[in-house]
Length: 64
Image (cartoon, rainbow, N blue to C red; front, top):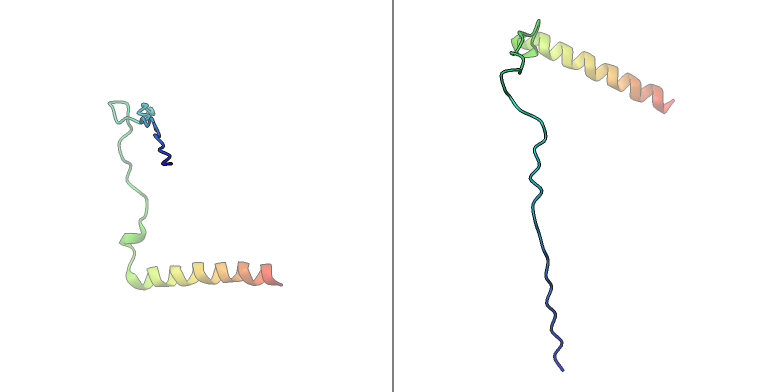
């Protein structure tokens, strides 16, 4: 005896406005006082090494 199923899956999207709009009340972009992209490459590498050393220091302290 064959047994058949009918599945009525009622799918509907939830399109709700989330209040994120760029209207006249949006503030203009502000100039950043510094940017890592404007730093020279050697300075960027030194900063990356300093951050990496600091993170390894945290790992070293956590493993003690």
